[in-house]
Amino acid sequence: MTTPRILSLAVTGALVLLASCGGHDGVELGPFAALTATEGDAPITLTAPTSKSPAPFFYTSSDSRVATVQGDKLIIGEVGTSTITAQQGREGSYYPTSTSTTLTVAKRVCEPPAVLESGACVTPPATASYVTTGALSWMPTWFTRTWAQADAYCKGEKINGSNGWRLPNQFELTALVASGELAEKKWVMQDTWTSSAGAAEKQHVAVNLATNATTSVADANKAFVTCVR
Image (cartoon, rainbow, N blue to C red; front, side, top):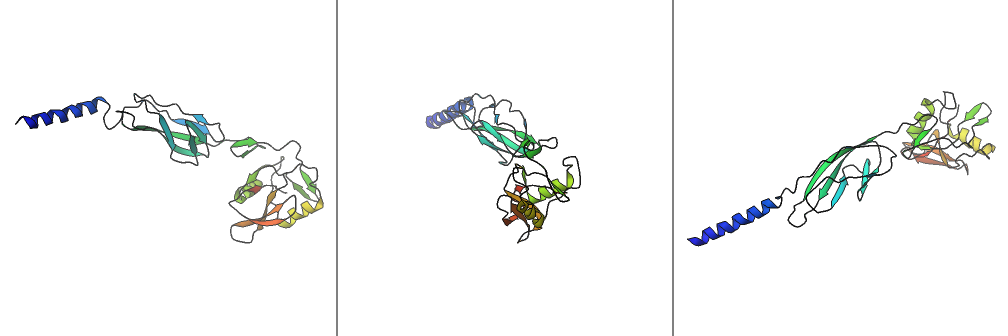
């Protein structure tokens, strides 16, 4: 009759030991404050919540477009929100535990003529010149956009003090390159959007300003932008 009582005491003792070491839910973690950033910001160094466990923290981001994690640093990406989770694995008698917070990345606003390029506000190079050919005025190339963004920029922005700009068509842009007017103007001489439809749906023609070669580019890709009026 004594054997069952001995086993019962042994099991009870084991339960007491587990409870004293934090239990299966892990230790309680301290505050993990909400985070804010603006696109293009430098990486954020994360401050770990307080914990009785000696286990190292590691971090994850629920949306890699908004932020990615490298060690204890958040690399800021696109506008949006992401859940940032701080986790501790099991170490000794301490069980795994975690806590989360929200990172909010806001849009960076640029003052014209600066535009947002790769998360930073960039202005036209001082050496880049506007060009006039016949009755047309041309904006220098210095930033990239998708086709829809380029079209909206030209139609919606006040450029060089004036409205009424648009994307050039293929023949206008190839004629500009052939004229030699871009020599010494310090434009970026790469593939540049036109308003002319490409060879397939959701494509438009881009003209290489260095070679005058034309190619069909998917609208979702980026190319340089010149506006004309």
